[in-house]
Length: 398
Image (cartoon, rainbow, N blue to C red; front, side):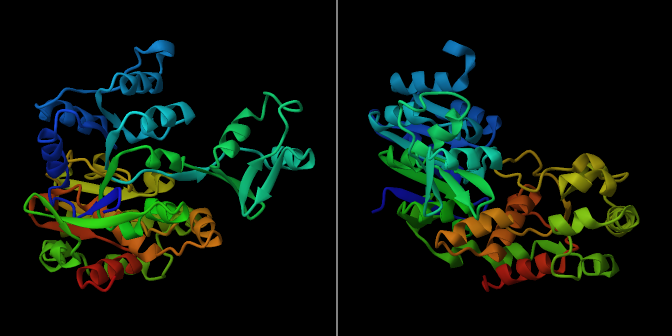
């Protein structure tokens, strides 16, 4: 059995319930770190688990930083619940503490494991000219002797490069990767998500050769991974997918993508807004409190309208039940992988499937609504590509 187990099951299958039950019935000596996207879910862990006390990092630690609090709690051997945002700040000291502490990690939903690093091209050229760094297989290697460079303005580059987490990609920009040593510092790791094969974290695991195995959840127990357990046909029957003239805006393959939306002029965006408004007020006759919608943040103000503006949530919203009463959904977006992410993985020999990623993100967003309770929803999905991907998912074609 691999040390990293991916619990891959459709939203609402009971992954979180399984995790909390596992913690509840674990031997007293077993220690857990539970990482989740939202503070509300941290609170849920603290309130639900009765067999052992969980703590969460606070700003009351030395230096007023939650990261210091987290380190102190690890030193004390406490069971800890914290957010992705805090865990993504992991540094060498935290990794060293984890290596000697024998924790089990439960990761609720995948993390943001790569991002652009904010280093200017001129700084990179300077460091290369001074032979302070080398680029080997796209990775930035710090080569400056301590006698020449001890500390200064390039400390951030030095630390990331020494940790092996900095990549110089296509001579244009730097990419930071979450330190993979973290995933080697735990006794056992459970990653709970859906369609892990599509996730950026899966590509990251492949890049760093972090081995993992797939499992499913059935009746509250871990079982061998079975895609058929998704019950996709029955789930799709709960979705009343709009098929009408308001889809006219999205017939191009790239329609509603980030670039496409940001290239629309005001008149075009107004026409899209009219279609959304008509769908909400005339076709579904929905009340404000029934609607959930999303689009690219940069065009949100152009597409919002009376009767649905307050129902906006980001398209990457995961792992929250706060909107489980919503029944009318508008997903005015067409998800493609960020070009720098896609090319980064491909240049490093890792194949990506951005169609599967697109439908994965769409499903995660849809499942913030009442469909998670087995109740029907209405969905306006103006992108023809996204509609076809949703139908392909329902038919097990992707």
